[in-house]
Figure (cartoon, rainbow, N blue to C red):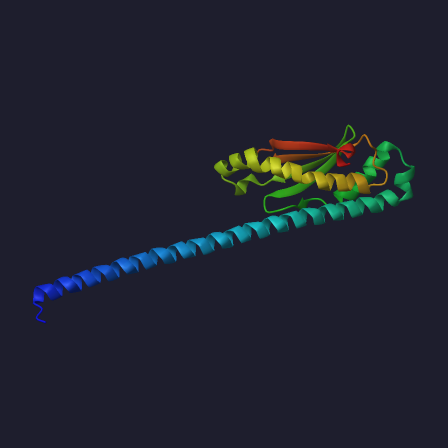
Amino acid sequence: MDYNKEELEATRRKFVAQQKKMIIKFIFFLIFVIFVILAYQLFNYNKANKQNEVKSIEQNAKEISHEIEEMSVSSEISNGSTNEIQIQILNGLKKQLPQTIDQLTVLRDAEFKDNILIFKIEIDDRKISQEDLDKFNSSKLNTLLLKNKPIACSLMTNIANWDELWKINYSYFLLQSGMEVGHVTFSKGECR
C-alpha cells in the first residue's frame, strides 16, 4: 500500500477529531455524573437538616413540658386561682427563655393574655435576603406555623391544671422591624 502524505494527514486529522469528540463526550458525562452526585448530597444534607430541626423542636417542647409538669404538680398551682396558675406556668417557661429553635428563629418571650398563652418567636431577618424573606413569608411560614400544633397539644395535655378554654398562640416577628409576619392559635379541643 502506498499512502501519500495528504492521505495520511487527512487520516490523522480525522482520528484526532474523533478523539476530541470522545474526550468532550467523556467530559460532559463526568460533569453530569458530578452534578447528579452533588444534587444527591444536597438532598441528603437538606433532609438531615430538616430532621435535626424537628428533633430540636421536639426536644425543646419536651423540656418546656417537663418544666411545666413539675410546676403543675406543686400544691401552689393546684390550689391557686386561674391567674396564679397562669403566673406559675409563665414563671416555669420564662426560666428557659430565650430558647434558640434553629439558625433563624428564637423563642424570645411568653405571656398569658385573655387566657391565651402567647409564644413570641423572633425571626432573624438580618440573615435573609429580601427575596428569600418574601418566599419565607409566603410558603415556609405556613409550614412552620402548622409544625407548632404537636408541641402546643403536648403542652396543653401535659399541664395538669390546663383549663379547657385556654389556648396557645405562636406569633412570629421579624427581628429588625418587630413586624409580626404570622401567627397561629391552637385550643386543646383541636388535639383530640
